Length: 120
Image 1 (spheres, rainbow, N blue to C red):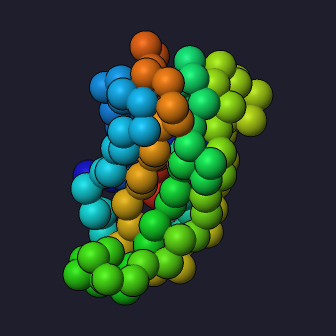
Image 2: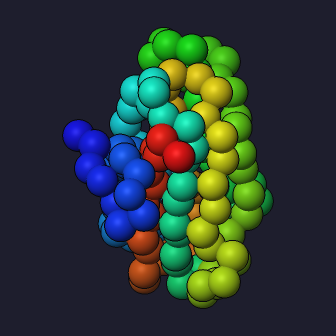
């Protein structure tokens, strides 16, 4: 379901969770069709750091490609407690996407992850 955001562009929510992760545990969103959208924008917050390269935006030509080979559009490491560089965006180049977050070696007590596909 798409909606019009405050900036006047259509958005499609790809993933949203606030379920805390144990040490080294991963969260993987459902595979979402992003056809017709241009950007993926996201926001992540945790009280502890992610694994190295622990935030990934994965894209693929079809839903079965995620099991074999996918395109890792963007990945970065998140530093726990950071509220300055926890917002980012990446260009969509494949019709399907999912978000994968891998926690670092410490249990979380706070975790928020939200990603949207946008047409502008």
